[in-house]
Image (cartoon, rainbow, N blue to C red; front, top):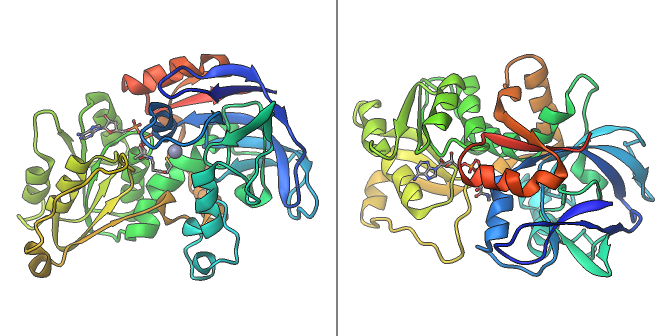
Length: 365
Ligand code: COD
Ligand code: ZN
């Protein structure tokens, strides 16, 4: 099968023939329909958190089931599925205590680029590693069946792809991590493919004030369309001051950082009210630090935390988001700025880097 392989950091992906081993117990072979191009893929190319290579990137995808490994139940060949990049083993402490997004096995797979057994099914002579369990910049993959959720025929495969990362992460931060309630005030910093989903989730949740900060006017225009009540051009305006002005000087109930930079994390902490919560979605570079005035902590009771994969319960949340979309409550078509073929993948990353995309989508059919 054809795949776009990362062989060296900060170099274009190379289009190659890669071999796929058959699915092992609990695994399936899938043929991709579409894959979103997420900033996390680009972060990997830039080598901010270097790990062994070669690797096949891509982690936000829809696909068809082609082959079932031994012991797979609940899926059939031909099923249309959305992939989630976080495997949940169902047995570890975190799975059993209601945090499947922090599954010890799943997080280990993200770190090591493997399947649950610590090896991969991708070969080019030697072993090729997975990026975030899915490796969707390829025609096919072998993945754990637990990472595939069947979706109805009415759901277009283009928008289905986005659900696996950007939509689950962005909406999950609001619905699961923050549990935003009607009337809450919210600040969202970073209105990219993930942040825009936090914006529409805040609107669905009934937030009264939804302030969105970005440095790209095109993203701010989409944010307004997606339910932002106020937009801030962070090149010339201060999101913290504006968030306070809009909340009687108190600060917002919740602030979400959807970029992964110390300066914008600090803005979120500054913008929340006493006993408010700042939630970091973006992952920065190893060693990045953010200064917080410690003396203010007991007086302010502010909470600064993070969320991985929007605290998703992968299968369940995919089903709920599909229903929201099919009932016209969640907008996904508008997120797709441009589609590409796999051999245009480097162009897609260029466009993402230039800020031209809400989401770029690789189409395989
Ligand atoms: N102030 C406001 N907005 C800014 C600033 C700033 N100083 N700098 C950049 N931005 C805006 C950009 O203009 C852009 O609109 C947005 O921030 C970033 O959007 P994208 O589309 O480039 O990025 P996304 O939405 O695809 O990804 C953002 C993440 C935070 C999810 C991603 O980069 C990340 O950190 N991923 C790792 C975390 C993780 O694993 N998440 C789940 C899988 S992605
Ligand atoms: Zn992603």
